[in-house]
Length: 220
Image (cartoon, rainbow, N blue to C red):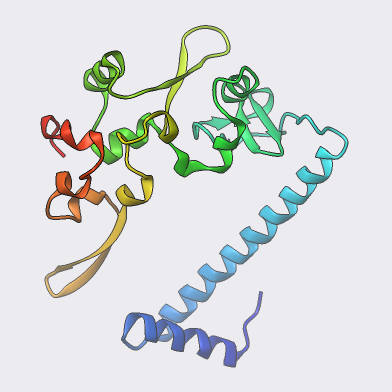
């Protein structure tokens, strides 16, 4: 993908407005290279998705995906071949698809990631894991949907907001954020900063949700 001189200068102007400083030729070249890479990836993803949608016309119930490197849109595990499943709700691992088939979880979870927490989410957002999480589940403080493995044991546990109304907050208020930190006169951009590092009082931030009454026991 080639950009004309005028297009490159428009990109430079936009970057300068965002960063409030001048952008040199090297920075501009790097940015254009990054934009081009993203555009090519978007085109490739669109083409692949189009082919999958087309295949659904002859296999409406779904099918396994060729190759590897696919990600389950429910539990986020990496899947391949016969351990993958694709239908109108997107890509799932066979454990999650089996849970959908058995009505343990609704199929819409794959399209509504903000409607539930994974175990990783609870750890990342609230430092909630291990024995404490298990005790909360056992004590009925938090409700988990158990996703069985295909053979034996538990594949993962999911925590739906509709199962935990009033206890778990909506995910947008505990979303990781970006921040700017200045070191030795230079600004550094930080990404994925936990929400509780960005507020003065994490417990007050969660006021109105039951989990706030128990987080004092956990070092956030």
